[in-house]
Length: 194
Image (cartoon, rainbow, N blue to C red; front, side):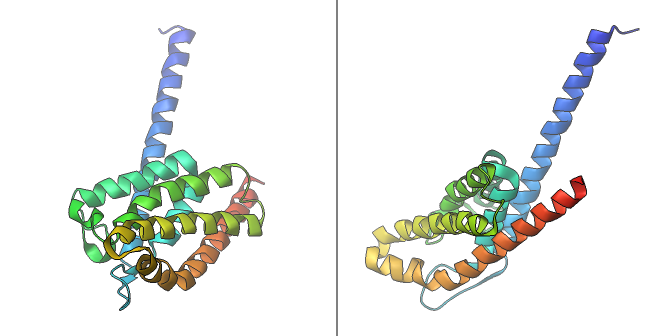
């Protein structure tokens, strides 16, 4: 027969293990969501970077999982793609893709997820305009990260013309969709708690 302290310790260990497994499953699931969103992609004639649904997925991952777990999920996605899994745009993968024109956007996913997660943790998801502002800031991080990666290759003026301006209309739409999805998720979550 086990004493109560031993049973309590076992319960704590099992509880922590369960929480760790839950967080790992969330990160893996979120990395797969970002990978799936990369397959919704099309090329535009005026940029070497395809338009994808990844910005939407990355913003939601940061908002829903928070700054630390959201960042971990995005890092996991980058590692999966770099390892050769066909997780980057249009089924590509491999470390060389990170050095290409899309590399800056991909690397910028990490601080964007962190920023959006941190803002949501500070309550920016409680009001629709604040949620939209958090998403817009995350989207701006991605666009400027991508353009800064392109700038040494083509010059800053061309980088803005090829790496930011063509993506603004779509990113505004993705930002709005992310903010709406976040608000809907929060409302459902609040109803479920009641």
